[in-house]
Image (cartoon, rainbow, N blue to C red; front, top):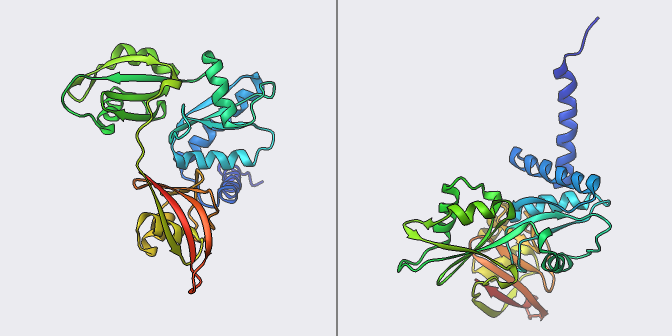
Amino acid sequence: MFKKSPLNLIIPQQKVYKQYLKKLYGREIMNEDKLILAMAEDKLTQCQENYMITNTGFLDMRQQTLCKKMLRSRADVRGFFYGGYSDSERRIGVFVPEYIHIETEGDLHEYFLNNIEDNPLTLIRAEHSGYKELTHRDYLGSLIGMGIKREAIGDILVHQKGADILVLRTITEFLLVNYSKAGRTNLTLREEKIERIISPEVYSEERNVTVASLRLDNVVAAAFKLSRSAAVQAIKSGVVFLDGMQTEKPEKIVGQGDKIVLRGKGKTVLQEIGGNTRKDRVYITIMIMK
């Protein structure tokens, strides 16, 4: 009698799982992304089974998009994203049990301010007295060089005297004892309250422009002074985020109040949609932030 090998049993299951992921996320999922999703699912399960707040490591905006789509498919779960301050880019996924009354990310931020022992993040303030101006790359490179994993490091906000570095609480003591240099510059470290974070100065410019339509590629091209083909390429390359969600669809319609991020270029908010020109183009007001 013919006997199925274990491989014959496993492959169909793998195919079904791949088809499920492709349907959920709209594309093939890379192995690295599967690990991120598996980790998020594991933390989610821990939250449900142990009735406690759990969290992932820091996620970039693309990884957050994957987790958001996963959360949308799970009506039984309350998940939020938190990076220590309102405009954070790298954020952790946080799963909250039902008995804790948190409904929004603002509620979560307030909860952590009032329950510091539950906050999985720490703000490390690094200061230096050297003459050389240190960059984001200097701080990140020195941390990675110490063997710190990227998912343990959040936003690094560089200012004149040093930098505010958001990290997972689990590595706080290690950093305070061992992190003493960025490049060849000596650092002085201390733990600081998260609400005292020094936010970077943001350059902003209001601009009135016209676009052929409110398609994402048109707005990106107008906001960042790109050709439409370059805007389409950027979107399809996965470096454009609409309201925190990675989108690879140039035809996506942008609404008033929507925030667009073009990685490496800056952010823009569609502040106002006006009327039409004689040639049927649309007047819009955008705020550019760099």
